Figure 1: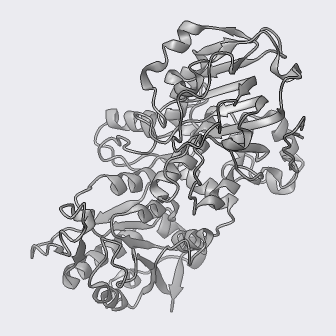
Figure 2 (figure 1 turned 120 degrees about the vertical axis):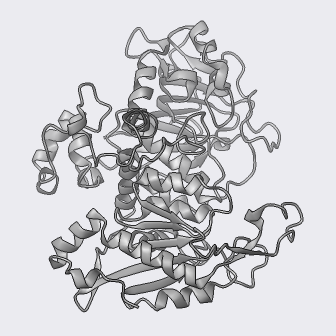
Length: 529
């Protein structure tokens, strides 16, 4: 059991669950892959009925040494235009990305220990990910005055941060190229020093933590697309770290400002930790010694994941993204009700995400004739329509995820709400009704998740979306993302027919239907209006 030792004037206390408690609380498909790297837990698993049923031999995530392609987690990536693109996809946005970070990490021991009581700092290239042990932090300059600077670069002077280890100053300086708040940890670690004392044995610490602390520098919390870059990179970092994904960790929000962090998706922290997130400013003016520290991958790294990520042409299906989706949904207890039927035929669940109510004039990219499109959807006898507004004030995030996970077709205008594509079932179709000229963002996200994707196409009658309210926004009136739109119901009907057929013919849907109801009869798969 991991425990927090609480010294001096600052206290952190937690009830630490053990691996045996809920036995890992992992998605069943993930258990054999996690236990590959944790043989002691694997032996415990064999004694647990629910866990032992999930065990498999000869499997691996993909980043482990000697892990051949046929043993890797998940399904094969599809539709790559060339084998070169397929390899780039695996190395850039799948578990090959984890392997590359691990390789970098193994080559960059910034500060080496001589004994187990000494400190350690080791990083991937450009200090985009780092792991430390027995480190010292003096936050004397934090909170001295009110600040709006979220990521101060002058927080530490030499000797304010460091450890008892052999520091390679030149190697550390060589990592400075990506110095930027959400691209690397170099600004925070630039003055890392070799100290003449062992932090965990020192009496100079106001706070001593014998457990694991994960520092997080966060993107904008009010936007699901951006904030889930934070959560995704934390999950990816746990893979780099060789974690068994235990929740006996303390997450600390590395924010040097005195402002409140707006976070309507805070439920998601429960995926990673049993302890409440604490702000860095709680340690203002204190000396803190920590046994185990992670500086995880960041949300806006160059060639990072998944903000502005290059996704090789045509490729669909990153198993890293699929595993992240499964992990989040499992830990938050979001269930999938399975494929649905009506009178022995498939019943497709269509969710239409509205950005705001029509009377809300402060939100743009609204569907001006939404009622016409809903009427079209209801013409299909085998379609069940749900119109939702994912407003955090009115609908809890777990309810949003439940609706998304139980949607066969998910339709919405370009916007952060389409980050829900990550949590659709494998057979679902992600339908970005109109991308407003930003063609790649949610198309790429759907491809990463392994989904079929559609967006508006004009068709043989050249039925273009019709804008309204142009130039209404005082600042961005020339940008189509700040207009509202009308859509031709006839063309929409054609696109829904296409979407419906893509779902019904998806191998995962066919397999799920067969397991639950038997074969889909040919007459059942015809479009019915």
